[in-house]
Image (cartoon, rainbow, N blue to C red; front, top):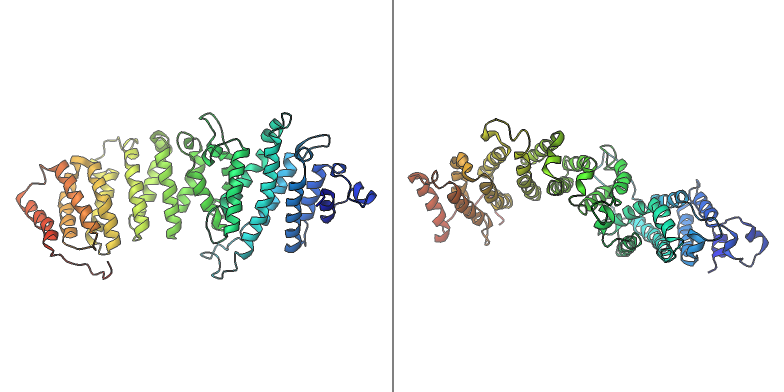
Amino acid sequence: MEISCLLKSLKLESQGDRADPECPAVTALPAEQVLSQILLLFSAEGVSGISKAGMVRDLCALFEAANYQWLFGGSQPTVTPKSLGDLVTALNHYAALPEHELDTKGPPSDDGFYATVADRAAEVGLVFLSLLAKAEAAKSSKTLDARVVRKILPCCLGQIYIFAATHQAEKPWTTLRSQSVAQNLLTLLIQVAGCGSVAEFLRGQTEGDEGSFAAVMGLLKPKLTKETWKRNPATKYVFSWTLHHVTRPWLSLHLETVLPPSLLLSDDYQEENKILGVGCLHHIILNVPAADLNQFNRSQVVYHALYHHLYARETQLMQVVLLCLLDLLPVLERSPQGLSQKPKAAAPCHEVLQLVLIHMEAEYRLPLRRVYAKNLPAFVKRLGILIAQHLKRLEQVIVGYLEVCDGPEEAARLGILETLKCTIQHAWPRSCSEQSTQAVTTAAFRPASGKCKRTAETPL
């Protein structure tokens, strides 16, 4: 199909259209004018969804047939970064997920809620693929390379990245076709940007490079406030997926940007959002220096947010919370509060272990018992000889868990046996009283004899 015929199908007015009905050359109409009129028609009020779908298909064919010199340079005026950015924004808005009401837990249960989203995303993704393909071709030109990469493309790469990240994984709003298009788009985006991976695209190729992470977060930030983050269900996944690609030393530069959304997610009432938020906090703890985390009392804020989750009863949430706390405790010990003269028993590690042991002693659900027992040895190793302060309650937990079967794999009892081993290694002078040794030894050898209790929970 000729480019000028595509312009006619979009109802563009030009001298070529009026003078030559036989489809004149496209050079009669500058790219800037074409894209501006397309944007004007696409954004006009009252345009039906069918009409917009046709425009998107025609725009894709236009980019495929056009020469990169017509689009980015040559004798005619080139497209400006603003017009290209506005067009990408309009296409993103067209393929965006429907916004949710704040007083609802999510989308309606019917399967048709996201029915049109995947189709629109696939069509828009093809437009972006065609656009980036022309940009990649323009890089071969010595005269256009700098202009395309440094001036025109940065205005739209961030938005295209967010679009690709939204649809590249299996979600309720994606199909196999939309996922495939988004994954190909992400690959080509990285290639056009001159990077080798998503991480390089976001953080930069070297420590001194700025990367695109700041631009991406600038686009996501208005959607990650307390009032807006639940309106678009894809935003939290895009944020989490993007955050996990940025590691040290780059992440510390963006700590003020990524910490509030992570705390916001972890403080939600839905388990899925809590797990997502705690995962983001854990990544931040692992990839930001302790000095930066302790500045402005940030580490204490994170600690109190995680400590609150120790009262949860969800197995998956408890697992990620305990792992996150284990990596946060060394950071807290280096904080001004951790170096103060307050009693050691009030230190965060002692507070966490004390609460965990209280919950372990009363817990009867096997999945939670397995999670507690799996992570308890790490706390014992963390405290070392100071575990002696908790020996009385720890002995009760060890005996109680060794007496209860938890299925063929015996995960809980194996974890408790590892805890017992660590306790003997670190606190043997205090753990060798005759009474405690007899009780623990009896419980430890009871599983070997095949005699054990069962919890009130029937399924194993």
